[in-house]
Length: 604
Image (cartoon, rainbow, N blue to C red; front, side, top):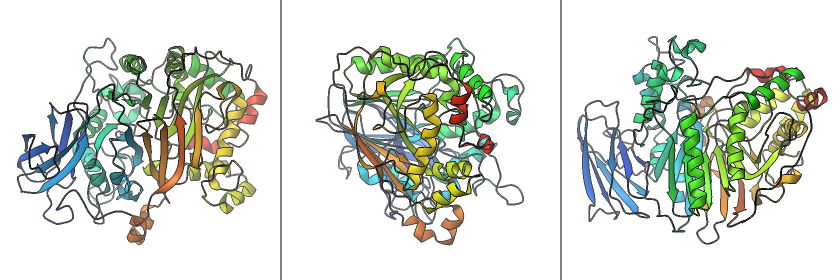
């Protein structure tokens, strides 16, 4: 249930001028960024202390508010590693709000590490009861994992002159209004305010911070939505407005690439982040949008030759999702984490890197398979253990091992890495309902079966609940292509035993809820526990008809598993094993048997 209690003492009063609460972010061992937005012009003061009552103030800094749409940010340096800090923000109107954060532990310490991650929330679906339990989880960190606004989904934040909701934010102030909406009060609650003031934030973008499915490294003239006809999309005004508002409304440092030697990244905004948390974990945050090449043409799933064409082009064409500097940083930091004896390496990748098959694959890493294979090959060849990719974007939780190919039609090579996609905080409908609608559109019996099933989150694969139904749909696309079945307990032969995981609650699929995921590294055993919380999803209409029923929904565990780390394998990488041979028409006909043509029109 949402709590009306707040770290902001005046949040629910008309006199509150800190309307988006306060936040900290980009916290390292010795520094953090403090953030607040005030509607009062004038000086805003940031104080910080190691004592919750502020008996001793460790430091004070100020900023000046001259534009009430522009949040204030200050960087604090000289902090002590592995320490909890409290901060107090007071604006020119006298409104005060408080928050807290922990600095990261120094390398060599094993103090444990607990963080949360979620993506995808729409403003008109606030106040987000799906994350209402997160502030009480004593998190070291929370990752806002892309689609932090939906600039291209109408809400009350941005209106047309006639008072109707505008379809797409365009100006800088309109993008700012979309961010202010999701971090503001609604129905007496500010759930994101509660969370952002309770722990440090890391944030990255996906597409909806600007516009659906854009490719920042593509020529501007390839996408008429951006207006300009010269340069790249990441130099257009629409892109710049979206990224500037994102930077302003998140407690992150303002960083830019220098002269990188490539047009797509030179002098551009840098959202890539890397930090270590003792020897328990390293966290890498990627920007998968700003520099990517234009997508391949989606495969026609009813044409096996075109599916073959898509998979071949994706794996052989020299294309990038990350851009050369970011790819180099990722490799360098993964290797450094391994060489420094850090147990877990978490890579925050906004779109999934696991295989789902050729359906709608152009926007995911499967549409950039050459670079995908390069990343996984690097992990494999350098014996980098305990790599966990964390994705969002698809509005559902799906967990799987990661395999890759060297060339079209060749073997799947298993790695010791896996991925979990975390469900949406609030995007209706979730993944499970979308896939069910698509795959049962021409099959009334399958639709009747799906409708009869409960949302039960059980650990088996017997189709006796809705998530089992969705798991079966996905696996029927994976199996003919030789891809690993969904879950860490159902493996290809050459992947068996590489990941030592045990399912505790629910399943490795949770595709019918809103929610978030917690990652908890035990300080003694270094075992990783991954817990996904969820609530029953809702629409805006349901929220407005019965707001108290929606806001009282309490997150419960819908999936939980543990993974024992490889501490010191000392073993060389396993030899690749062939899972399937040359692709042929029969293979693809089987792979697309449950996927009607309407799937091609679906977008997240």
